Image (cartoon, rainbow over all chains, first blue to last red):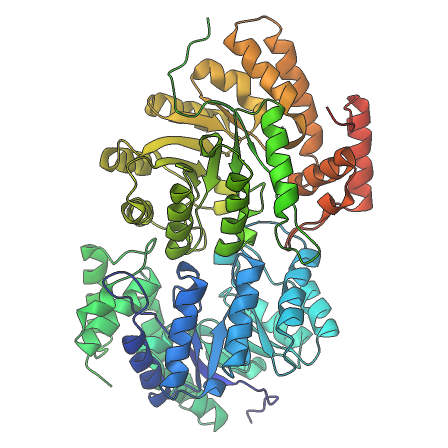
Length: 308
Length: 308
């Protein structure tokens, strides 16, 4: 029987891709449309401005404008988890305070990521400064562990320090290490926190271990199938194993090339909208060879590029 | 006989430390005083908002306010090299355009540093977007190669692409790899560019090879001695070897602990101003053991903590 602790956020969360216009600025109308679509496709929520959303490539103001557009368009703040962690402390504070003021209390916060081999004491000071300055008792912080990109791991020691100092605020961890042992370790060490693996490849395995759900880039293009795994697991249905194999197979095709251009390419095809192909530098579109390999891989899985 | 190509920037440049006030915001009056002092101590110029200046820990606006304070205080824009490279393209453009508008045409630009293993094509697009959008024919770009922190190396291929597309704009490279072979490689491949090693340990060796000078953190606390090496080399005086040994020995002591807190600690002592000890998170002050080891190391070299 599937049992899991109740968390404020659980299930499938999609880290939405961010469309850019001809000036490479975020394209709010296309963004709003994608976020609404992801919620309709079965995502429990949407993580806006994460790594998949090219968050760190946009300025504070660009991110604020787009978040405001989502809220004005009627997206429920409770179904968003807003990325606010920047290299600059003052930028993180500005983004967190702004999001909280819009009702977006769930925030997925990267550690500062320029300096390397910084101490847990320094990372604690960074998170503490954000929490203290935002000063919102409803703030719900999810720590963002993505060592390959941030090169700044969220250690157990750091989580312990933060959870002790801010027990009502530290709510969970997104573990984008891709390592099941890392996810298991967080789940065992911090049973009260909501742990989200960053890939659906680990979804069933870590749900069984006590994860809250999954926050996966693939949900931009495969949300219904990933949601089906979550539901089958919740309902303890035996087909969950085969469903998991299906989403894992697709993920292998998606991550064979750089994921963000892969996802934007599929969105462009599926939505019939080539504007979706654009990326903000330093990311670039797939090469012709990468695009061909992607098409072949998707065709082998009979993955539809038509709208779901 | 020492001969070197003429470059727009040459000699000793100090990447100034950035003091912060009790709110952890940049402290403009103390900053202006340090920059003026470094120029008086013999630095040919000052690199503002580099790694040593904790640049990436400050917002665009915080950096702009401090740069304006420097110019208003009468510091010649020509003696500054302004760091403007951020993770977000729009932030880099804003900082570059602002600095250029103040007359600060020399800019030391980090590549975007969140995404890893990005292509030279993507890095080219980033630099090209900055140069195109700033659209200032006097802009003088120095590429910032600091692979340990940015994890995004400036490759020879990237330099070739940029120098071909923007021959009047790409002026040089700061090589903070600490690797003499890397510096030699840039000098040999790009004889028209001004190559600056990021440590004075390599100063004499790379000046002999054709480097333009040195941009070193140590200059915050040891500018006169480093300048003396440069002058002795220029004048072909034999004592240059012994002078180089002296600055190398001090550097070894400085870099035995995290450099930025080491430098701020020495500045606090020398200026009699404990406010200089503060760092913006995620950086933290030295531990007591680190501070003791630093004091011992400095005492062994008879390095004066009194004002020069």
